[in-house]
Structure formats: structure tokens, C-alpha cells
Length: 166
Image (tube, rainbow, N blue to C red; front, side, top):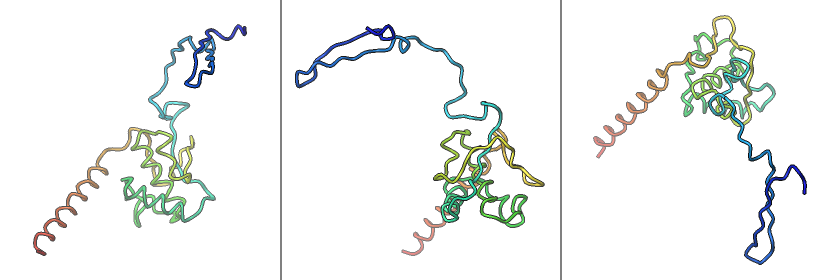
């Protein structure tokens, strides 16, 4: 018997065939490790930012940007005309800002930096000139609160209009 195998269990399946299950000895040894919260990469080798990938389809990038600034509730005010991150006025630049804002708001997890395969993580700070990219812990919940207030306001208007249209 292989010394790396610790236990052998035999059983029969529903058709009467013998099934053998072997466990590796090292699988039974618990390993205590200290790790950051699941998926959080900020604490591994420093801060990370989420940016748009160059070379992806412009259509896919635009859809991902629209989602991040809409349902994703990223604060996209700085990439609006006149905002501190509007220039350069490119889809790649605007998407990078929005993706990072969403990523930082949502726990720095790998899942929060996917955007349909149009984004990637970087350890290089993408901030430039007057445009400062957020890092973990630097975002407040005011953007989400403002967006939710706006949604409730719109819902109220729709309800009032439906009442008066009858």
C-alpha cells in the first residue's frame, strides 16, 4: 500500500459493485493559516486598483461602464464633463475610474473587478493630475445613499402621477 494513503474505505454501490475510497494522509492534517477576508486582495502585497483592459471591444467596455455607473452605483460624477477625471475624455479612462470606484466600494474582491472580462487588477496607482483613484476605506457611502434617495424620489413621482392620471 502506498504510504501516502492513510485510510481505505470499501462500500458497495446500488448495483452491487465494490467502491474503494482512499484518503491521502496529508489531507487529514489541519493547516492553520491567517488570511485576509475571502477574495480581498488589498492586504496581499499592498493596495490594488481595478482598471479597464486595453484592447477589449468598445461595445463591451461601454456596456460595463453603463452598468457600473447605473445599477452598480459607482460614483461617476468625476468622469462627467467638468469633473476632475473627465480628461482624458476616453472610454478606457472613464471605464477605469468607474470600475475602480465600484471595486473599492464592494470589498476589493476579484469578483468586483470583472465587468464581463473588461477589467483587471493592478498594483500601480492609476491616479493622475487632479484625478485621484479611490483606495479601500477611502469611499463613503454617500454616493449609494444619494442614488437610493434619487430612486425613492422617482418612485414617489411615479406613484403621484399614477394617482392623478386615474
